[in-house]
Length: 322
Ligand code: CP3
Image (cartoon, rainbow, N blue to C red; front, side, top):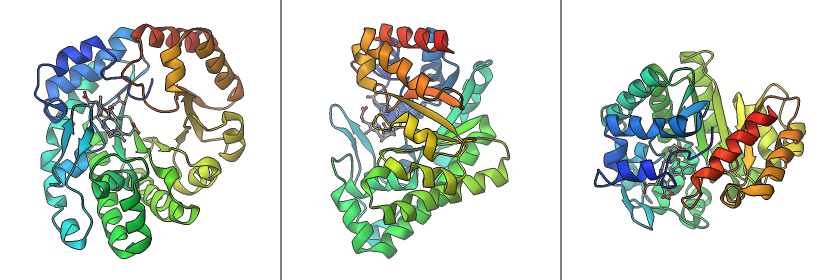
């Protein structure tokens, strides 16, 4: 399967997306969300489906406003002080996210032999968008809060950690067979704060899920974690670690314990290019991870301009190698 295998690069996604006003309407209409979740399986025969939703549906469910603006990405009213944190209401989450659980149930009923992967953002990455009020190149407000008001930042992360356990647990109860934690901005922290805000909340989430749902694997994706990926794998107990595009698979294989699967890590832009360049990169990654559990994937999500036929070529290359 591939990160962001559902999305605007697929004409059949754009057709469904055009039937609703915005992204949130699509994510909260189970019939349509289930339909787009299954699109890449129908087109390419992927071996896993990833729930169609977004990591920011959790802040939305907590009562923080959320809007997806065309060409601008997500926009939220920033949370930067204690009063703003106090407006977040964990009591709303289960009810607000009910339509997403119905999507999971619908997909599970139709997915056949493929695996259904549920997901959430990691508390740190979700906090980045909540504090900043949207995307950012450097998440300067968030990092400044983490260093300057550690008690408040910690309170926000604790709230998100508890809510994420509940959210992922509900997805598993609805039929998710594995879950992934997207920590897209893990790599922007110092090693000290990486331990506090990435490793520690992730370890708490994995432990809570293991207790409630023994045997359900958790895939962690601490993007741009560099050499801290080994410590991340050892301390969090995830069953698989996603490698970002910049990670050297051969080095990652020496840092991450042998029983932990590695997932990744073709550059999404190699997929845009297709052809011989993509084939060489793909074969290099597969060779570097030969002999250990490897889930072939990208190093980050598919980008909108990707030619759908390149995805078909990639699936064929990976099948031929396996
Ligand atoms: O196919 C899949 O991977 C499953 C669905 C999925 C989406 N977002 C759908 C989506 C998943 C797993 C995500 C995760 C996500 N969302 C992350 C973590 C992974 C990463 O990319 O780093 C992050 C940071 C977000 C936040 C987010 N959502 C942004 C910044 C944007 C705007 C940028 C963009 O690509 O448009 C979104 C919107 C979004 N999420 C779209 C999709 C298909 C595009 C919405 C549209 O149809 O216009």
